[in-house]
Length: 413
Image 1 (spheres, rainbow, N blue to C red):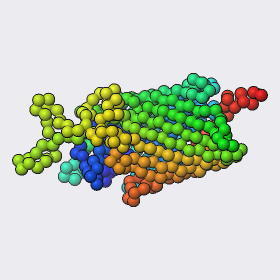
Image 2: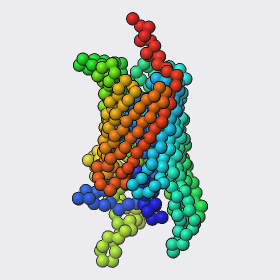
Image 3: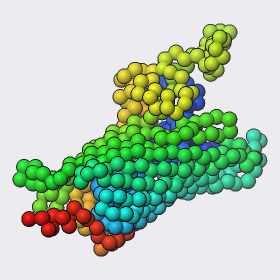
């Protein structure tokens, strides 16, 4: 049970399941470790193998069946009438054998400017044995979390689109923390707001190229409540760009870059009480006048959602330099042959003081008429990393070729 609880608490790098709790700052080589924590961090796990093979980029990559997670506005640029796909991701497989995430997604074009989409993400944390304080077995429990999305994307011009998605989030992990009782499931709602730009083909030297750009605000929603505490969900801002170049009629090469920042307050540095000998204890000092915990640096994280989003840009105890460390980067590249075969690679970087997730990714994709199979594998930069042996497999189906812009190009002189 102890091992399983440890894994649950490290589901996404160093991010814990419960956010905005009082934590003691730790030191690493003189640098303060101060990661941002949220509830339901499974929403941050890249759900598909295509983007997963490119360092988890996704703001400005090409439209596919999994665009809802990365940037829902891309769906308006889908070239097929209808698509559906399924991804399986064994998670933290280097530690335990039964934590998995499943992702089912799809879209349907209404017309050449409008597209709707939906997805279901299911995260199973495996089987957990519960014991009381004396170690007596109290039964077993299989906690899970899931989220359901509905999305709509609209082209405002030939090159630009907007998107909105609504999300219902359910978390059934509370029994793990209330051993011997049933606990209470928690749930909340969130929305995504996104935009996407795709240029016309232009000359890049003697080649033809297409530039893309995207911005997505995801998981913007109310706090989720476990027991008596309310916790922020992983509200996130993703900004990215890409460039795809046609090497010739059959070969293409694309590069992408994303920046991610959690729109959640940074934990402050608290003042701790001293014992009779003048030594610091583990108890946070309470201001006798206000009755609130005393903060040495930073700002109070116990604020409403709107304030928390705005505060997230300027509340780091270490100032602007720490704010910059809260921005993670993803870089990825893709080589494609005749839209039938693709090779991908990427790198994800997060500051060592903000979670330390740093890993390379590789993957491949094959297309057989309407069926596409994509796979990816994650390679951490550090040995004995919980993310070792992480792989993803995506099977997708796209039907009814539909590309209004291409049809116009055929008839135009």
